[in-house]
Amino acid sequence: MSFDWSVIFSNAKFLLLQGLVGIGVYGGGTLRLAIPAILLGFVIGIILGLARMANRPWIHYPAVLYIELIRGVPLIIVIFWFWFLVPVIIGRPIPEYWVALTAFVIFEGAYIGEIIRAGIQSVPKGQVEAATASGLSYAHIMFDVILPQAIRNMIPALVTQFIVLFKDTSLASIIGMMDLTKAAQTVSERELRPFEMYLFIAVVYWIFTYSMSRVAHRLEVRMSPDRRP
Amino acid sequence: MIEFRGVNKWFGSLHVLKDINLAIKQREVVVVCGPSGSGKSTLIRCINRLERIQNGEIIVDGISLSGKKTDITKLRAEVGMVFQQFNLYPHKTALENIILAPIWVRKQSRAKALKIGKDLMAKVGIPDKLDSYPAQLSGGQQQRVAIARALAMQPKIMLFDEPTSALDPEMINEVLDVMTNLAREGMTMIVITHEMGFAHRVSTRIIFMDEGQILEDESPELFFTQPKNERTRFFLSKILTH
Image (cartoon, rainbow over all chains, first blue to last red; front, side, top):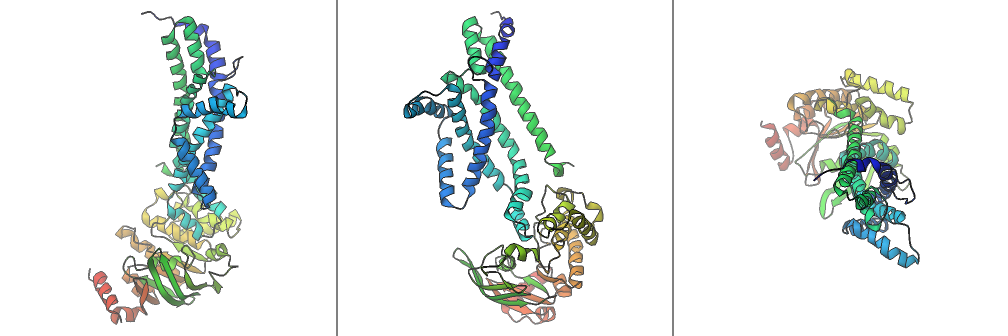
């Protein structure tokens, strides 16, 4: 068995620019999908997490239903819903990129919602009581006392979820979106070099996910001045 | 200053406060004791409405807690509270813990709040710990910061919910000393504690509770020498023998 690593260099522009970043005739792109999916999923997650903790049943129950429904279904099925079903309902096809983005945001929102809720509930009840007893308003209790502690507690789980999402974007290649995985598949079929291609993109995925966990670690340390000796 | 009129409270089907009638005047130092589950903690948590009552009325500083127009946050500002588990904000330094409510609730300037905060840290005996985080302080120091935090609001009433129960024995006195000084300065205080030495020396009145009722309400002298109730005698024999 012999390797030909030059196949990576000769196709680097296509793999990285088109596949990773999403600049090129095919659209798509792993980063162009992952970054907005993470940001929008986070926003949806905050809304869902707070809604789930609400006392009003008409806010609480729809959030519970959404989270339990989405969490019980594989991601690929959610992608397929949007790929096969929604075009039938609205009567026209949707580009792969928008199908993938919608599916990811809806799917991730459910998980992030649960992380937000767990983070807020991880703050001891005594914190709320002390703040309440001192006469602080709900907004100050939330923003000065609870959220700073909750967000710090959430960081590890949030980052894990973002890393999972980043890697899961490779599933978008199944519906034909041109991401890093699809680009590698395309090159490997043309050049008959699957080993080199899939090893290369594994390294690219790893560099990004490892960087995310490093940044998160630093953020966690910076947000915890009290835990330094 | 504080008045309970026919107060009842239930947790679900559990009747935790049974027809409580109680009046506490300004400058009184009232110690509340009794076995766990007797309702003493609930009793004082009703005073700043951390717990709501189902019937009866509580009047604090002339204002009814159940009144429709009562501004509860304004009333809470007048009632300081110290908890068994300190409940300091772990992400803030000692001084930041102290100035948070004065700035946002009392609308003090930051400079004024810092000045008062530093003075209070000196008053509770730890002027060198201003910039320490709670995790860097001993239990006794944390509880003294918590007392300073409550005092920073310049409250009319101070509530203490077992302030020394979570402390190592050698740290209990440093907290009790701060509380003793506060009592001498004329603060109206309600203190849940089993520190009977403190109760004897400092309090003006001792209340004994059991099963949601006030069984004894006496001066310290009479409470220790001639308790009226059989249950009180039994309780005292349990905690005074060792």
